[in-house]
Image (cartoon, rainbow, N blue to C red; front, side, top):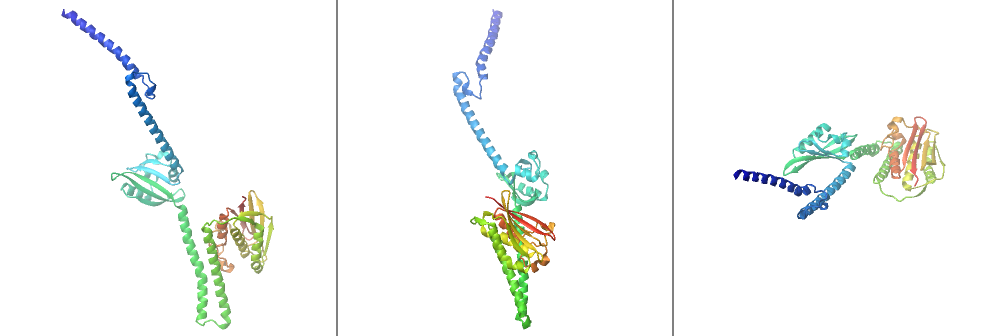
Length: 403
């Protein structure tokens, strides 16, 4: 009896395994076919509906969070992409995690430098000091020359629980600031020199008169020198005040201005000075009008004509012309004077710059006339053209945009 019974048990076990396998396939099959991307669209056991509903809800939440993350990443990329400041993020070893467009341009690299040591991108002593301080937990800044400009580079440690986890490097363009500071120093030095020279002459003459060392017959000559140097001081101070007002960028009301009328007014004002130099002053061209600030336009014409008279030759001429260009109204002042050497033409609009410093006292100029012209032209939105040949003369054109 035992062997048949064992055989029956074995057969029953085999049948049970076969049936269990088939039944498990029928049960597991639908589960394996579930599309978890769209859990509510599956046809499965009713008992699984709560689970699928929960999966659907979590899936929706994850999708919304991913969309929000992408949106924030896009916003961050847009902001950093348009930044003029360079931004670089480093890990706690000084290796680059992220570098943004402005920083790539400044350091002459590309996105491929991610993962590299920052010192492989810039190994200057200043950068070494920045990284050393930042990785030690101290914020520091250095001045660096990058891409032809001057930049202030800040390195700040990123701290977590008191430990340095990374470094944030940010660069600021200070080229204009440093240039302005340099110009301010030069301007101060030049003003001091220009004021000191006539003052010394005035003090010297006054001291001689005070001590009775001047003969009565010479008193007129010494008084004339004091008056002449005082007038020079007044002229210099007036020019400095005009430049200061132009630097302030004050918004002034615009009006319709006839350029020929302004030129005629200037020629009338300078006629006596031109006669002393035996220089003829004429106005020609079209009767054209512009919209601008009359005071600034007058400053431009006056200073150009005054310079043209001062640096002219005996029997020379100055002509003011008004003409129409392509979308521009052109005021041109031409003279038959001494001309400007090519190497000096790029600097004549700088403050206190003189081509021939040895004749500065003789001509009586302050060295600020063309600088006033430049600033006034910029304020009017005009551009300047200069053409000159030594010994033949100079033409300066102020091209006003048509509105």
